[in-house]
Length: 193
Image: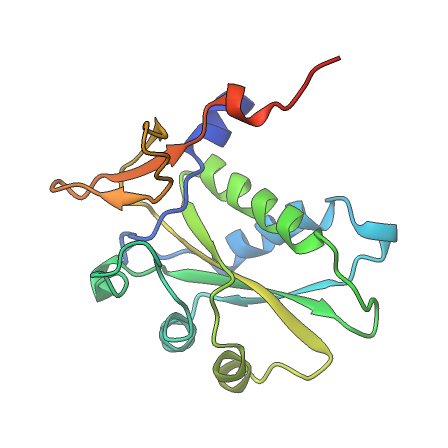
């Protein structure tokens, strides 16, 4: 069992996967089961999930996502590097009118659970919601909050310190290693008492 810190450090956004590695629906259900136990504002528990391991539905979902804003010359993974599962996180407007940060908490828990199983993922808020709702038949009372792409990772990601120039943009080097600049801890803590 890896430490929690190791799990968090390995949990980078992954955008390239082994498309031959299929994920079972039961795995997605297990991940949602983890999210079900997360904190929820006023304990309203308004999140609902749409799960897909279906190739055709996955292609439709894929076409609705913005893949990597900083990688301007990359339009997303090649077919053989696309995710084999998706979880669409929605908020049920009949249960709450504000979802606060529930979807962020749930999505991070799902991604940590996936990483613990040797999988990886990426959460998306850059979504063509109208198109996605049409493809999946999402009813009006469910508000799409995030999409989580999941699969077996083929991407290597490295965390590094933000340089002197302050540039926080992730990038890929000539070996396709994904570099993720992070601010120094000393730059984040405003004060201690």
